[in-house]
Amino acid sequence: MKLRNRFMKADNLRFISHLDLMRVIERAMRRGDIKFSLSKGFNPHPLISFGPALMLGATTHGDYFDVIIEDNLSPQEFKDRMNAVLPEGIYILDSYEVGEKDLLSQHVKEAEYIVKARLFGELKEIQNKIEAFMSKDKIIIKKETKKGKKDIDLKPYILNFKYISTDEGWILLYIKLTIAEGSPGPLYVINAFNKFIGDKIDTETYRLDRKDLILD
Image (cartoon, rainbow, N blue to C red; front, side, top):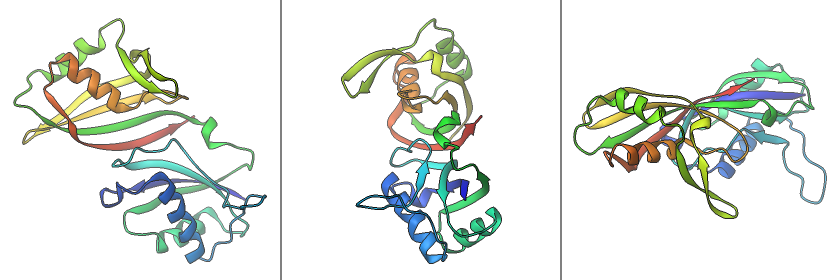
């Protein structure tokens, strides 16, 4: 049985790597006495697959992983057993059954992010500046690829970009992006916007939360 699970990773675990996160899920299933399926071959491993990896230092309130289990558990029972043994900061929000040939990677289409960054001084009329930024015909950036840096147009990937609030020198921004192979992440948006407004945001000091992955 294949279960799709929506989960959160809180601030205290933001520096756990993607690989370590996979190990945490595996160990939690062992502690929860949940029998899971293994791949075939010389080095069998649990049949777990995640959505797009989060960058180190980011939190999430709506990422997904799939797992194939051999126990005849209901999704609710799987969720309850896992949440009883997962470390503080990781919590399964929802669990449901999907077909074994149903691939998570084929359903992830969009992602919502909240970026919190420190401001250099005061930044007035932020939403107007965002609208001016988004009114450009193209937003060309240099993106790191396996073959080196490449110029791409960022604009088609940005579905929504808006100001939320400022508080004691920090700004909160909302970004919604298309997710596809090779698509740029939210920090490309922040860096391009920061360049557009004349370096008013400290792009070295920020907090990133993937608010939600949106499946079709």
